[in-house]
Image (tube, rainbow over all chains, first blue to last red; front, top):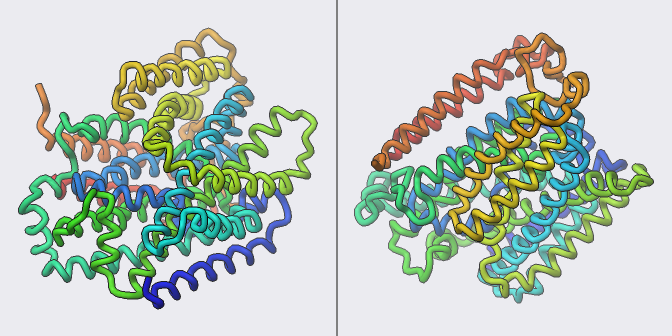
Length: 493
Length: 63
């Protein structure tokens, strides 16, 4: 690595550590630690959501996918995100905010029962711990590829930096550092677009070179017989189930909206994130297309982004781009750690340990944050030996998304869904997803869609035979803006 | 019978239009706090409309 690039990396690490530790001084209570004392403004929330959403697997993997399939990769950022983000901003976030909850499992606990809360929390924690290990491993691999650090050193250094501000500063530090990281990511993305189009001889020349040998690379959808991304699978599975489940039920994503200073800031934060999300393909799709246009000689598609950094970017900017990749991963790891610590502290400990002391939540939260970080660092070196664990994790997530979305949708939009029906639907829906995934061997997009199609009528029908909550209990837990009630009116304070 | 791929674009555009109708069916009072009633830029339905129109433009262009 060139000394100027190295200087850029060192300056970034110093800045992030300084900002994070500054926030530590503001943390006095568990609310400060987990919800930033409900002080976040809409633009910090929006940038932090994008920081949490874009990780290095997405960064490098999406560029590689774009190299192979073209602009169709952007569906994950467009139809696979924007509609769900708008619905989250206008319907679900106001609902969670008014319910006064710290987490999505806590909302499910209030709306259904404590069994649903604990099962949902258990699902989130299990997936998160493995996902953090994968992210830490990917970060170490990136450091090894670019600067030749051994895996153990990459894990130790990145874990220490993330730990310094996550353990000390909580959500406030995480959100502000995320915002800085996203600004760096977008700055690098714009530089790559500028240099790339200039090197290709202008935008018309870029398009002509791209489509000369890859005529479908500027088509948004792939044919219905495509092995991985058939267009109806993308619309039905990704657009209608996986994406809404992620954006209305993802704890790591939604936690910063629950830390907003007002309900309007919470919703506007998600809407601002949707604006930024529209342009994320500039960061993660364009480099893959650029590698094609510049006829990069690479062994496999995932090498597209590293090739662009090495061969297209000038000294200094390549260091900044390297920083952007580290930033993408750090912002995902820190968010997962903070949200998982919250769920264990409140949704599992508070429910299962009846004699818990809420005063110790801050201390427990910090200990858990450190423990989760150390767990991820310990798991990370072994992830490489497990082969396709990242794909396994994606498939694992698709098992839960259909039933979880059904519970959230019917729970928020109707008063009919009951607690007993909720737990039966959640457990049976996950079992059905397991059968479809491992016995029938369906594509994960269809698994998510079919389990959602099962869970909605199942929840509806079983609820007809079980006892619902009272209207008074559900008043702040269901969305009914058309009713003549003050319950759904937003507040500026 | 298989629908041509271009129908995916048409369906996407249709979904975004339906979402736009849904957004504007939400009363203003449920989106904008009374304290901000006079500030149009705080009406998130307009933000959503801008996003939806941009998405429709993207799916019209990349086909």
